[in-house]
Length: 411
Ligand SMILES: C[S@@+](CC[C@H](N)C(=O)[O-])C[C@H]1O[C@@H](n2cnc3c(N)ncnc32)[C@H](O)[C@@H]1O
Image 1 (cartoon, rainbow, N blue to C red):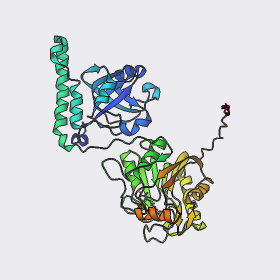
Image 2 (tube, rainbow, N blue to C red):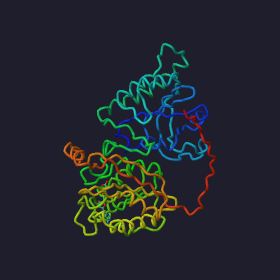
Image 3 (cartoon, rainbow, N blue to C red):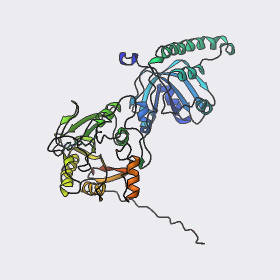
Image 4 (cartoon, rainbow, N blue to C red):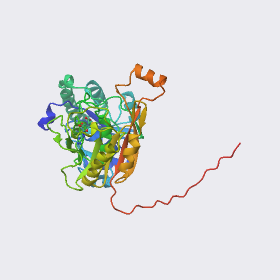
């Protein structure tokens, strides 16, 4: 085990396979899965304990030890490239197969995206230490070796048991166009500074980078504020360059987003949470676009320059995520989101629009809710996440779709 992993607690993870894929798992001593489970796999460290659940036969195999960190395409040709998120494993002694996997996993309340820790992992491992009285002599020898190896792991887990900092569930990638994150951050370390005015919910960036980039890809945030994008990229193993007109951290480079010092077609994703108007005072820099009212055309003209730059640096076919909210000030509503969307459409093609619930707003108090009802206006409840793609220059495929109308009889 590498020295950096040595002092970290051992966690347990359950992989899945089918009748078709099981053989290759054991022949190659490699477990693999799809990108949808990538956030789990890249968190696996050399030395973690793994199990394999054959979903077709309802069998649970154990006990395995990760002999590599989780990564992408460790063996690119495995499973014909269908399961690129992989980890190399070794069997502790000899593998054991337990029947009724579903019932066992249910009893231990084990979910794929929640690592097993401490006592739960110890109890789970006990399932794989067979009762010696039931074995013949040859099996006994194998069992002794296996038990010794498993007990060795159990001792290591026990030693680090007080170091276990219970990690949240590993976030799953969102599946709908409505995102509502109760907390600004996730995981064990902060992402950005949740005291920074207008800080971005970290799971927005998490979701974008898992959908549209791969580990090692380059992500750029030209208006980085407290650096949420930087921290998320670090945790999710992406490279990242962050700029801001008034940097808050040494890793953020001072730069005006209207001129980004990067080459054309060089970036895999751009994320921007721009000012929504002049409602927040970010800094005293004269070139802060957050000093311009979103009721003026100038606001959109300046942000259009940022859009042009994002378009220039992005590789063809790659994605820009732009977070933006509407404004209601002193009786006047401004549909900032629609206006920004219209400008973006001059350069990009839409991929989708996400409605992100606004939480933690300073106006989300009883007093303001009451005012909104009494004076007949609405508090802002959501923001738009505009997901746009730089066209790849290839002619658009016209999709022919046969429409099969359903007829419902009228009563
Ligand atoms: C909504 S905040 C970004 C929040 C950030 N994503 C975070 O999580 O902390 C908008 C940022 O745009 C920056 N900004 C405003 N005008 C800018 C400009 N011309 N060039 C670069 N950054 C600018 C502000 O300084 C502010 O930090």
